[in-house]
Length: 169
Image (cartoon, rainbow, N blue to C red):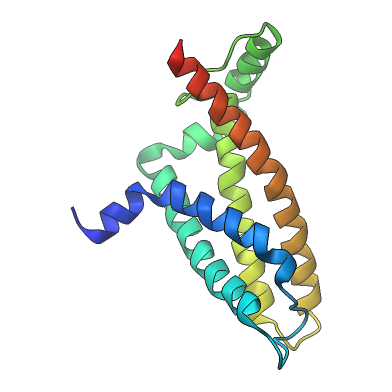
């Protein structure tokens, strides 16, 4: 097995670890509309790992969407809300939704794919526009989306835990 295929197999876990690290250390980052002269390890760590995470997010999105699998995560874009509504009704009846099929869990995963992509793109746009008037706007979007990612990770963890409960039955 080649290095690239090994990376693709572990991409989900790697992205989760990177996202958690970057989010948990972002309070140490002091970047605004430029990289200041006294930028330190935390600033450069955020820039480098954020760039790596942005690239890996694109790779993960491609991996998840090839061979028509995009319909699993983004069927709602085609107006296919039935499986999501069905899973919500199941939850109301205290039944866990099935994993790996169109429905609530894959909808949640699809939102995460888009969120990671958007965070990466806004971070790269912020980096590309440093020293310009646009930098602070990109920074604002990047931070807002990152705040959403924190809530997404909580929802994703709960959904993942429910999947493990389903497997244990």
